[in-house]
Image 1 (cartoon, rainbow, N blue to C red):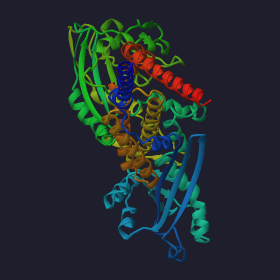
Image 2: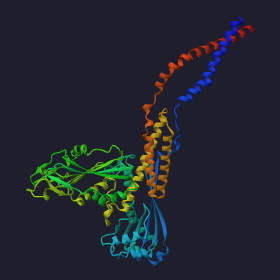
Image 3: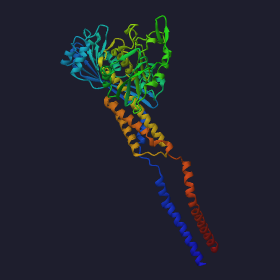
Image 4: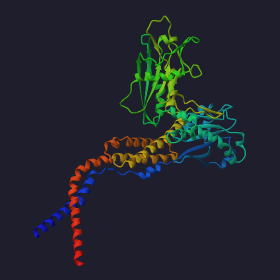
Length: 561
């Protein structure tokens, strides 16, 4: 009996030892080796980004020239004023605009510059004296008797960040406070024209807010332009459907250098651009033009233009090595049997440029050459394309596609043409304000969506590279918001670009694919056949030991009684 009891005691100890090893060592080791690695993410900071509160600060400098202030008024200058506007767009988006206006009198050199015979020359002379900071606005108040502006012009906006504002008779009398009060509405109009307005910013936030809050014009401009991207591919294509009739020659390299490249150089702070060109032979339109006897020409109606792009696009090819958006600009030369060919709008009137554009895709221009040779000419006819005419149209379309909105000036305003640069400095500032806000909104939405996804699905691995990208995006977003608040537009745009790049790299990381991981029910299906045969004997042994212990306690109680 003693040997049997010893053997039972040894079995109990063995079962307890095995259970202790499984519980103390086996389960923690299995749990540690099979757990999903999830690097630390700044969830608290990301949750703060879900509520977007932006402050845009603009520095406005108002310079009084000789003859606009009395000697007593000049003694109280310089001074500064701050004006703020707050817009609660929705529950999660709030915009605050801060205009810091500084007043001073013109220097001797600025007075000499304002004595130039024309406003354009004065604008250039003022630019040579000092270059204004990116995002700032400088308004020069000139006397009512000044000959720089025509009599019916109140404000002249130059190619840089400078505007000339004609003083009204009231501004020469009364106190300085009255003068500034009379100037404030006009200076506000100039600032809204040269920096940004509320509708521009709402259009930049159109993916985040209700569309009904955005005006139709601003929304149309926003939908026409490509979304912000680190780079863009621009392709110019010459379509020659009838090489047997026309031998076309175009100096595309020289035209790009003269007309397109200055604009792209100006836009270099926003994105990287690459330009290429090609000639496609026997490429025809997807629709057949109709012959109009009243004008003895073929016509394309506005309703049929939508069917032109798809057949032509199949011939254009694609750049598989780049993920950047592509802008296509096509020059179509009709064959001899369908010339001349004119595009008509919805009102059945001929389009002066004989071109049209498709939002976020590009533009097509029809170039008629039938009047460049006689009917009895020998084919193929050598034809040199007027690139100045063509690039004038493509340049206007490119500005629209890149988000350079056509500014409608208030009455009495004159906007100087940007000239060969293709873009005025203040137009670049307007685009940079919109792109900075758009980048911040897009990056914050991407990061918050990623954080919600990772919080809901706990078995997705968060490696160190993703955590680094997320932290970098959050840091860049915070820096961009701070720079917008400080009025440093160039730095704000730079940080916003870094934020959107880092957020997209983290969001589209291949390791975040949920299909690479097993759901919990599949894990149980795999582990139960492995652990159940081992756990059943251990559990039964422990239950038997527990039963014996209870039986002993019951026997002891019975003996005492």
